Length: 403
Image 1 (cartoon, rainbow, N blue to C red):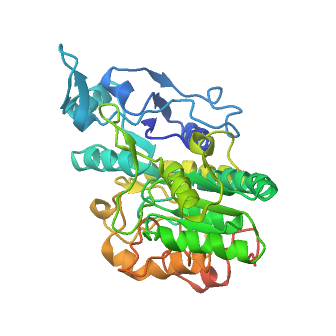
Image 2 (image 1 turned 180 degrees about the vertical axis):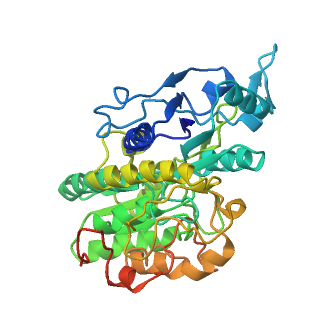
């Protein structure tokens, strides 16, 4: 058996831990392992394909980034090709993936990625490639998952920043608006904002009313709290408005969402008369080593992916055998492979789990919630508990329930 491992899309802390676990698990079974560099570029002849051995993955679990490198421009079905006049066209090069995989004797591919990379993997699977996906994103927005590795690290990075902003904001009686990543999902903003005791939290799922944001700032002033911390997801937008776009992306890339913090700070300052500053946390959330939780989660995903290959459970997500969340397993396995897709959560899931965002947000987003319309909830939600063991706390073979 020969497998290949690919990391695509934005990097996330924990990628190397997945690679390490998958390689060691495969080698233990006597398999050969190849690494496809920069997403699928290696299989397209645009980059290298390297052998992965025990020595290759020694001492990498604690490192951020990915030893295979990554790209968010490598969709083989819509590959950007530069023309003689400098313009780009998109061509379908997926046939080359199959030809080169067959030439190299690759029996299955473990693709580690977010919604975009897993959607590519799904299309390859539908055309006959044996694929096992490992959900990865700091945004925590891959469908049918509870949590993805990298999210915990990104949240902790944001919390650390909020803690530091509190002291400088209070010293100067300022309003500080901090923008975090997440694109169209507000999980990083919501979790870090609640944990960091931000005064206002703005997320894409709930369009905000700028006047209510300013009313919260004024209310804090009247209460003697002369500073405010606003945490805003990069994809948040006002009622009746649109998300903020930084500008044109490179060919083959999704549009670049962001810039809302600066605009919001300007509006708050003009409307309240208080000095407002903005901060974009940016790629600091992707960098650095993974937290202990993310290392453990990533390691278990890597091992589970190899188990899925061994059991011929292709076209699905690898799932750790031991639940990592009190509310249910990491990935839903009650759907046929063709339905296990990455991307925005279906409307039925939104309706079923809408209360999750409200429970997590509590009063923190009350000032920002729009009175118009029903909040749109996207991203990931817990699956219902499947057994009393899950309701009572998750259990490992050697330990009792964790309370």
